[in-house]
Image (cartoon, rainbow, N blue to C red):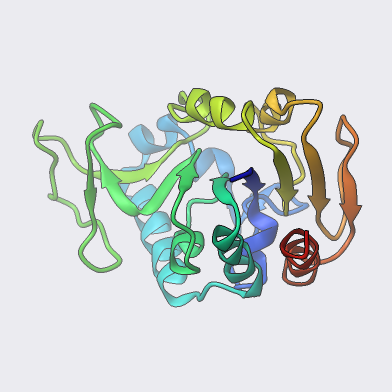
Length: 226
């Protein structure tokens, strides 16, 4: 069974009503990234950071997987599908995908502020003040912030290195180290790039300049017809 590896970004979730991580003005939902997505912000104003992610979590839980999420999951009928996502939502899982690796964490879980490997499910949409991990520290969102290590980067690189087919969907490839994953894909792999505006990308990619809900279905139809 051939292995398909898919790298997804904010563009695939935008059509489910979730704002892209960083808009053209450098803001995320009206907030400066430095105020809500760094370890320094958490130390400086944990109440603001917690409130921000609680609101994002509520939006994620209210959103529904779209046609692109669901179409990708259908590839599992014929291929070994691995999805590597930069997104912190759970829409791939709810869309039916079984093998999903989150590079930047997943907002529906909390984590220890001492050890990011210690995570917990969240009851509802809020992490409340006073909810602590096994080390006695306040729980925080299970999200990789700017300036923090990306623990899943090496596992993701290993998956990419074994791809027979590789696709980049809905990402500007502007965030590192995630963008470097394309360098690990074998030269022999069949490659697709899907987005409304496809960024510069090294390699021989078949480019489908469409929104994810349209472009992914085009790719899936082609792959399932083989």
